[in-house]
Amino acid sequence: MTQTQPAADEEAADPGTTGRARHAREASGGVTDLRRVGIAPDFWYPVATSRKVARNKTYAASFAGERIALYRGRSGTVYALEDRCAHRQVPLSMGVVEGEALRCCYHAWAYRGNGRVSQIPYLPKGVEGVPRGVRAYPARERYGLVFVFPGDPEKAATTPLPDLPQFDSPRHRTMTFSRTVRCHYSFMHENLLDMNHQFLHRSVLGRIQPELLGYEKGPEFVEARYLFTPAGGRKDRGAGLLSAEGVGGSASPDVVTIRTQYPYQTLQAVPEKADLPAFSLWVAYVPEDAEQRTNHAYGLLMIEKPPVPGALHAAWPLIRRFTERVFAQDRMAVEAEQRAWDEQGEDWNREVFPLIQDVRGVLRANGVPIGSPAAVHGAASLCGAGGQACAPSAAARGARP
Image 1 (cartoon, rainbow, N blue to C red):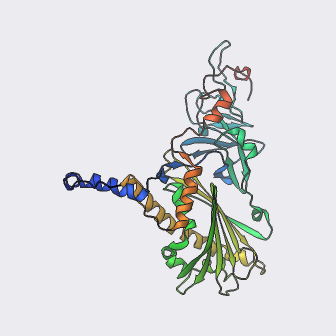
Image 2 (cartoon, rainbow, N blue to C red; image 1 turned 135 degrees about the vertical axis):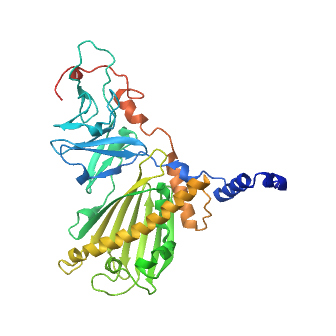
Image 3 (cartoon, rainbow, N blue to C red; image 1 turned 90 degrees about the vertical axis):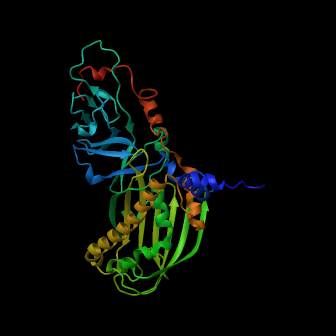
């Protein structure tokens, strides 16, 4: 079939628009722009570290534009509610914790942990149309993080949290990361999985020669194995402590395995000739805004303790400095990618690495369109579609919270 080329005078009349459209069309290959794909809500996502949610205090969190009020009751239990009072829409995260209930700071409406209004202090008898409450999110605490389930709450009980046995192992110590990154979450998956970008980290890692040993893929995952061989250059001391050099200072390659298992990502580094990983990383990239152009990265770095007592404790500040330096460089790159997307209005990436093409396919296939109502199932389970005009409850007529 003959392809019709744009007329010369057409491009001359509007070279910017025509060229931009052609460039975007060629780059995308006719598939959905991944940066317009939202993360699927039917998983457990961390939205805060546990220490941020103090007893008898509130904390304002978010998931993909949904504002969530976290609070820890007197018993120590953490609850997650839609962050708005059903009365005047004032954020409940501005409220006051009383026992296991949360009271709005404005008119003192009180809510139980299940989102139901338990008291309206001034409500006269016989008033109709009182809202029953707001949406409550299933919430759990594990690994020093507060997880919520923003999707269909009926799926929460059968959807497992991440399984991280090394977190509780006495042979490991865990370093927690919590950082905001101004980019679509997919850039983060690509960054960690594509280890061909080590030139970016030359000032921290020295010269590293990554060799892709192979990778596997499935409908919900992509897993790649690399051999990391030092090739000289100055290396941050913390990098050596995390690599095969370890505390003892020996030098040998590391085998690094990285896996995107939707929606999370993991990395393990096993020194050559060793059976167990020197360290393991688990990370989740949680969109904060409705357009999903900003994400919060929550990471757990689980490091095996060396035989020398106290060695890891002494090395901890060096390892922390090293990881922060690497993360800062990665953040610089992925935020630059997002700025380019914002300027161009389309994904102009010309990706040539099959591994990254495959992980993009996994993220597309398992995601949802940005702007789809992730909260509809939870709202319907509380008060019917929309979660609004509900029958007044007896508890709302002056009962104590």
